[in-house]
Length: 96
Image (cartoon, rainbow, N blue to C red; front, side, top):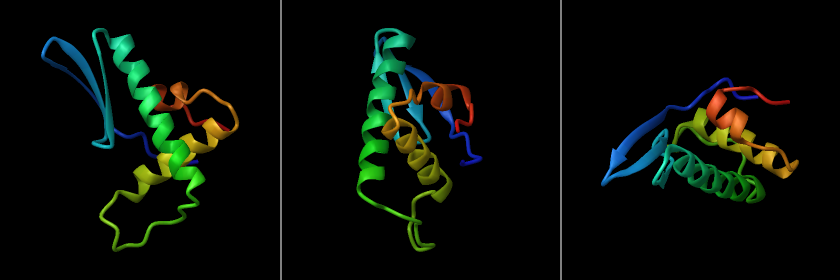
């Protein structure tokens, strides 16, 4: 499992709550719960697409953060098993 717990920022934009995950994606809503739900939906889509694409280890020439990509792959594995990514995404809990 990845040892990284990507940064999760909370902000208010135009009267709406925005949760941003390490610059990867963001969720928005009228409440914190709604923003979290939107973020989970988006992260799950990214993680599932990443995992199903067969992307493997990233080369050193890739400008993306390899630890963040490992995290996304980990979430994709959880989603593929039908698991809930929320504990890992929001709680930093490392899942089996």
